[in-house]
Image (cartoon, rainbow over all chains, first blue to last red; front, side, top):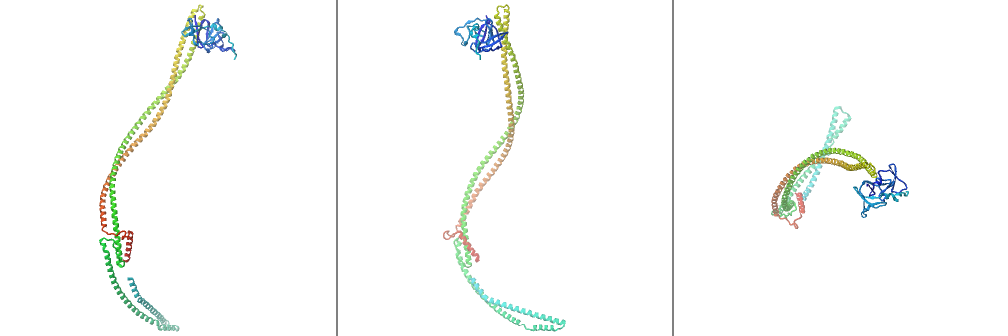
Length: 146
Length: 481
């Protein structure tokens, strides 16, 4: 099983490659009024409308400005804007001891799985993308109209 | 006394002389009356002769006879004045003769009394002369206090003259004595002065000798100065030649710098062109980066697609394609990285080279400015060197002239030294001569000591008084003489 590696707001994360449909770059995103700040708007990818979320802002960290991960349809009709997608890894995730939890892993809405995998570009933490898309915080994009 | 006697003689001759004068006057008057009467008679005879002549020529008329008769009567009339005048004249002549005899007798008497008076006067004069000689005798022994006491007659005049002469002699003796004393003092002073002059001449000779030596030293220094000035002139000429050579070299360097500047400008323009080419390359690199990103994105999406479609039959081919795309993306990324690195290095080198070229350009400008400044300074140095060369030559010539003048001064000082030495010798000779003069003054004082001068306080009058007395006596002597 392959895992796609990405970085967002200083976090090195990994999710199964099967949970991603495509990776986009320079996606044209239109703002949607009345939504929260981490919701970037709606983009069009391959003829379909795609809601795009700033993963770093959603996690309560800095905003991301890199590539956009379009999630597989069976996961959700959604996309996450991250910083970099350095590649893939075929390594198997291993549990991370609680004592070795990185200090900089602080944030909100971080659905980490407590595992990590090693690659040539470094250690990446496994992220539970399904828990993210099913969370109420991710689905509630209604914000105050400024 | 003589005057009284003369007056008495005149009085004795006065009466007969006056009487004789009156007689002579009366005689002259009577003779004049005779002459006048004779003239009148002659006139009347002439008139009668004329009338008689007219009668003889023209005939006789009554009136003419009457007139002739009247004339004949007048002629025949006696003239009483003639007789009287003749008597008077005879009487006056006799009286004059008597008076003449009287005068002659009076004169004879006067002459006899005069002779007796002269004899008496001679006797008196002889006595006075004897007394005068007695009074003048002490003068022979050098007594200048002697005075003649005679006051009357020739002996008085002679005494006055003697007194005047003695006073003058006394005055001369005193003057001689004071002159001998003053001469002695002057001789002493002259001797001292001659000694001082001799010493000063000796010192002056020493000073002149030192000055001459100093002048000789100055002459040698002036010669050295002339030599230094000549060396300076040669050095200035050398500096002038070297300045010309350096100016020529600077002009060559300036031309070479101009060539370097042109090359630098060309290099800078080439660097700018290289920068522009670098920008073009950077555009290509950006395009390559975009391609790399797209290829990487393609590889990622392909990989995702392969991962999500494991069950398809074409999975193996797609997987190989995905691997190829991934290797291509990786090679592109590596190439992009290498090109970017090389490009950055080249860009940095180009920028550094451009900066260096610009610095070289700026340095050239600074060097050009310095070269111009140096050229300007060299022109100034050249003009100063020319002036220094001219001044050095002039100084050398002047130093030669000064050396000649100093030499002439040294010769003049030698001449002055000789004159000073001669003056010192003359001063010594003068001192010796002064010694003779001193001896002469002593002799003069010794000869004056033979005179016996009156005491200044008792008998000797003041010099001014003596002079006035002697003058008075001389005046009296002249008057009486």
